[in-house]
Length: 150
Image (cartoon, rainbow, N blue to C red; front, side):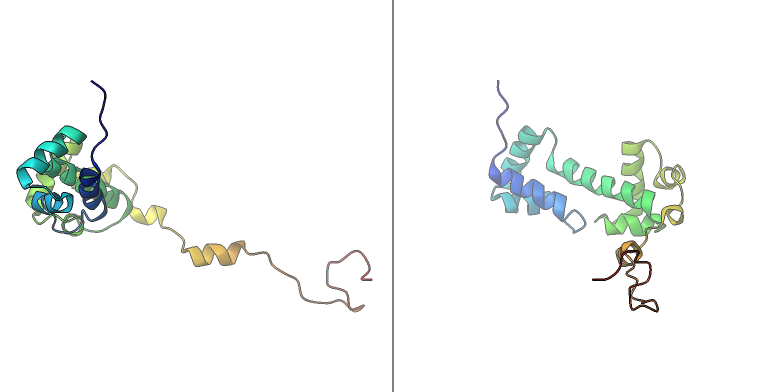
């Protein structure tokens, strides 16, 4: 049997989960975005994407949490809340089940966030700009110019 691409309404629900995972979304919200009843949506979503919608949403949240744990010094509780989860205990259990280690242990496997602090783009742009020499020498030529000005 050939793979049938998921219907647009299911993609709309999946895009909602991907883009707004940090909001208090539930399967009911995703079903509403797809324009289907909760039960029918759950069946169709699982058939199309290979996992139930609540597992898909939790996976997105845990992936984002892992990225935050690797790249920031925010507390585990803050990371938990910022990805749309409400219980640090449930977050820790789900994260440990998915990644094999607790969020705290996961973080210690990576260099501290301060070790790879990013330089603001405005500083990079200012530093990378060519330096124009506007000073002129005694002959009225720009400094550093080797050919006479005609």
